[in-house]
Length: 495
Ligand code: GLN
Image 1: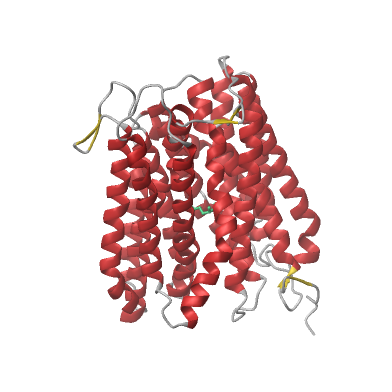
Image 2: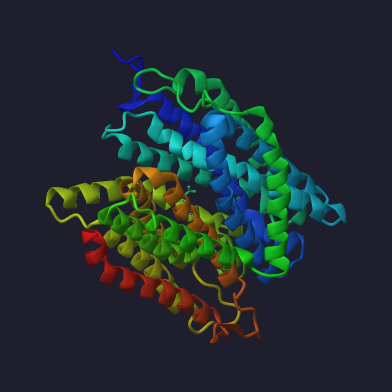
């Protein structure tokens, strides 16, 4: 009889330990994301283009380090130790940001800021890939509850994001630059809470259905302790890359491209894979490529859409001025409320035998993203000086983006899981992460074209003089990507 007798909602208790830990970590990630660009423009007095590029560089690197964190966990540390190390490093990172926010107007502030962000980049690399993969390890490989488990986990992500963005916007985005630090402090505390909860419950709850512990240090791990040198090295390399990317040349745009093409060639040359397996690998690459355009438009949330909320949206509500950072909250709110509806829709269509295949769902996701931006166009078409845009437009945009996310993000993840040949499952997961690396950097680059009054920006020959031109860019970008993916979907499904 399996020792995992107690269940919550039919799932092992361990799932809810991971749910809670991830919830607190996402509190920190998204809470900080909510105020980061505003901290740059309102406290550090940088322009929007610089803030956007920095945001892109940071959020890009956060997805690059998991490639190393995942590897170290598999080979040396195991998931548990990696999550603990990652959580503590990030808590320290947020604490550095808190200190930097306390002296933001003094010379040392910038140095603390860089170190803080560097620690976040390193810590996330150890935390995120390991907590995500642990969810699956709680179940028997053939257990059909796995998909549902990841859906519950995705709810934890968004619950954390919702609480974090609410608290950080309220305590940090008050209009007084010295208050941003409270958001960072809240994030640091959240991470400590997550880590404490994880430490408290890991021995008891992180077990397989047979009762064997999961995520422990691999028994034949060559040198558990001696790998710690990787942390300072990653910190220095990460900071160097961030600095170089923001100030000299956007290397982070090219990095994933080279890694992506290189790994594809490498896998396709492997003679031990048969033609069908190679075809499936190609599907993963094609889908990952399209996903870049999704996240690049989606991640405007923390940058250009927040500038827009700050400057152009009517934020008055019964005499209270809503902090601009709070608008990002629409996303996790809609994800949590719409996820059960979406699940029911897929089941309903499935029962009728007309559930769309994964590539179609992802194309629908891209379409919804384009619609979100399309809705903004009438709101910004003929601006009247002094008249602000109704907040309802932004709410509608986030609604479409969130439903789009539900069509694309969890679906894509399980598609990669299903299609990857066992031999390359980690490498192909890394490719999926690389799409985020490219997308987030691209998001920052695009946001740096946010039109300022009286200035015309030019993106690859496309001139943008107004918000209308700017939002139109995203309609076209995600719209074209959606159409192309629709056209390819039949073929991809067959493959
Ligand atoms: N919102 C999800 C998370 O934070 C997915 C984000 C992504 O893949 N870019 O985990």
